[in-house]
Image (cartoon, rainbow, N blue to C red; front, side, top):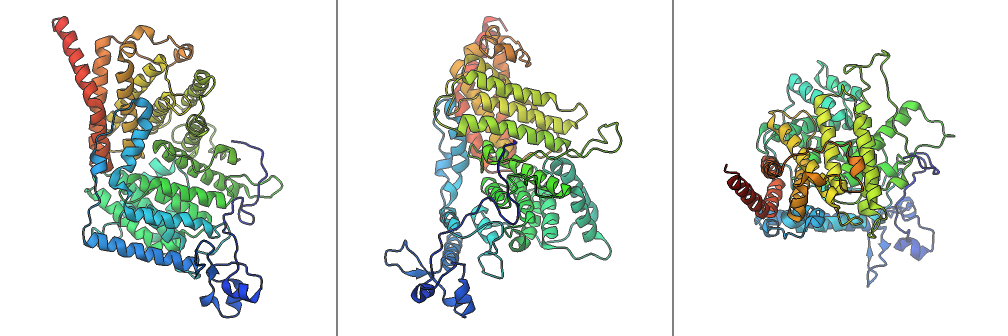
Length: 608
């Protein structure tokens, strides 16, 4: 990710600046004086005491009516709030009819489209959300950059937090019970869970910061905390609790909703643009949104986090001539790759575009911090090592996703060679995973690898036809992915950060399995032709089982059943998973009947 490019300092001269064209306000225009276009009132009007009457001419209005843009935005939000309140009061029905209709079978080349339809089909995104998004789309006309204070609470009631939450909250958070601070032992257990399973992969802030906040909250003479520290404490509790939930009615989930609601009290003062803490706060909200899609939109939130990251210039390392403290440099690099990792993961699983391309970045990976003891074992490993493994894999994923799905619509020259190189990179990455990595982290990395194999080998906008050997590999790794995830969720406790995105991945992988079996099951079930492809020599190094025809049919039926079970299990936590389950069953029903009939025929001919 090293690309020679001129960098600038983070706070003084941000690399990305979005602003509206400056037009003179009506008063300055009449006086023929220079107007700086500052919102909500220009400097000239402020100095002369005419701040409240400072309005600009809207060139888009046919009648050229003078309007204040900020006032317009505020009035639009108030209007939408009234409409939403009226709709709730009258219990206006927003139909789920589109979501309940079965998807048309159009071949596995359209599975990404089907995935997007299943995701976006829920409640048609609501009319209110569409209106709010229109407001947010106009937000680009305002001056927002690393040094702006346009959205400070003291300047206007239109805070940046209000814009973020208006665009990302699907429905209001429920209040299950009066808020109470959890017992110290409960809070410590939740914090330990977060440190071990989430912070170790997304180290968006130092572990010691969280522990210091915990100690300040629970000591005999509580120390005053900053707004960000309150946000950090409550969001960590919410994420850890919701991560352990198995149902949207259990106490883990209810506690998570209560704690995130408590954190949102501090949103106006925490989500202020131009500060590192804003990025960290947004990442915590992104993590929670991945666990609670009923309330928050993770893809829009990670977009806000990426914009905040770029505004501060964190997508470029500072120039060498600029003296930067090493700890500060390591922190900004770590923050960049945390946001980068989440953006790549969320965008790929939703089959959507990245917030920024790899070519626009130039950031070295964070350095490892080894212990003083030269003998490194599982208890003395660098705490950044698991995160670095994940960062490196996200970089590989990003390269092939941009090339296959985002670069162009033209056919890719030498596509077999490109896919071979990508699969080879991913396989080499897997070989770098240390033997002493924890079992649940190894499971998570294996799942990432299998899912990426299926995604990379599947049809794309640039590689539409898939070779017969490629279909065999999709078949094999789809089964491996579903089997491993089913084993994990058969255990009573989740030991890693599994989110709603697992439901989307299961739907995608299961759909790929159904599609390749519908297209070419005779070849897939014939083990003698597995290596008859340009990729054959390389894939000899990958473990492809050689089993007979009847066993392959049984594996297929078992995998389809496990996919149904997983989506059904996820349905207890996430309502949208029920929609995915209904769609998958519609796709798989004819194939299941066909495979079941073949099993009966083979058993009958064998006298079983």
